[in-house]
Image 1 (tube, one colour):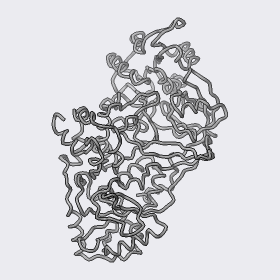
Image 2: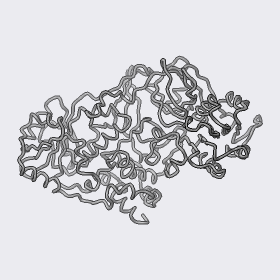
Image 3: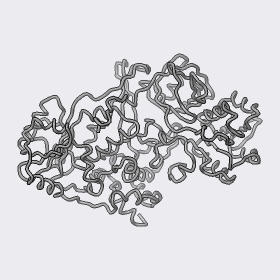
Image 4: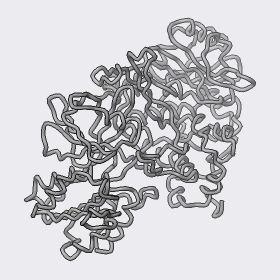
Length: 282
Length: 343
């Protein structure tokens, strides 16, 4: 077996490449923005993919790429502090180095859906991977039809990319709506879960000519999908990015499996049609 | 495939001479009234007449805690891969466990190739033995094809029932390994006797479903009551996975040396039946219920890996039946339950 595959010539799949922090700044109490660069080359990712970041001695964690591949020379991520590795990542400063493996996984097929209207749902930290597709579409705006971008956060303190959301709001080529689940005295915008934004745009949707993108917390998917199906969307036109524990990134360790599907390889981006038969998917 | 014959006494002497050299030799040994794989230093320690070992030989290729990366703390540019360096031989692997290694070979080379696994694999000689006595819960014939063990084995021994073994040489590595032994070419009568002895010991249990029909058999049974019934008794202890010759789920673990000057990243065994296995950042558990976890384990064994790799994730050794405190893990029992409407 091994002689036949000549595997001694392959490099260890656990070997990281070295990344440098270009810039970092806080976004919320627990979310931090990072700009990274590799020595002399791009990460080579496509919208919706992820990479494994590591700090030797601490560990490794899968993180979504947030910038569009149209941005050259560096890439961006937003990291939520939820454990040992992400806490150590939050301590990094500009100029510090870390390890990266990847990019891994499937992507939003932006080339194949040229000419279509785009309807984005980004809830909470789901906006982070979704932003790579949103900005890709904005950077190639003539390739696509109408663009709708709906964002939702649990409350005002959890809003991400606030400056960028402001620019989307002012961009006449995209219809941007935002809501928070729980309002506050200072908040003058929409209040309610993300599905409450759908009635505000539904008259202008053409379900037969629109591709929908859903990225958010696990609880959100069923509700958004139900609304989209009611509007006449076909499952093949709905893209979801699913979160799982992607430990190895190469379809071996088993942590990210949904039934027999490996999210790190066969996902994280799926059409709803391709996963609707999987009992563990949603 | 070349067929040799070797006297049992000569095999003992040969194994002892190999063990005295630079190659680490492992095989089944008697331990506390049962059998287990262990290091062989004396040829007479090797007990090729074992019924079943407590653990499978997978740990020689996929150690429970396997260093894959060396580094200086917080210095990504210092990372270097760690590869196994010692030659080893495992002598005395039943066909089921050998098929399990063939499945591991496929798993670690399917798609992205795991060079750390392959490095150790290339330094390993595998010698099989057909069982000479039944295993208490063995159903290997229901789960593997006769040719599958030969995808991994370098050589296979068959006890001829007298004072010798037939020795099938499968690979060049196997030929080289036994070149210094007293094995001699076997005659046609030995070939016939070997074929007869290969199937002389029958399985204790037969699965109620043909192996290749298992994926279709399991389709649509994801919500069968058997999962709740058995899940309610599951301790989620991971014993079934620990003793399993095919289970290869793993986690990654960084540990620093006490000097704090360097550290290692390990690939460590993990188990899909453990409660935190599918927990994501933020705490959401995608397989929170024991019922879902034991369903996933069986589907991996009898459907997912078979469909992905062409060899089943269960080779019918029956170790999980013995290891499971709650007695809920044995695939033939689960399949029998699945054939009934109510579990």
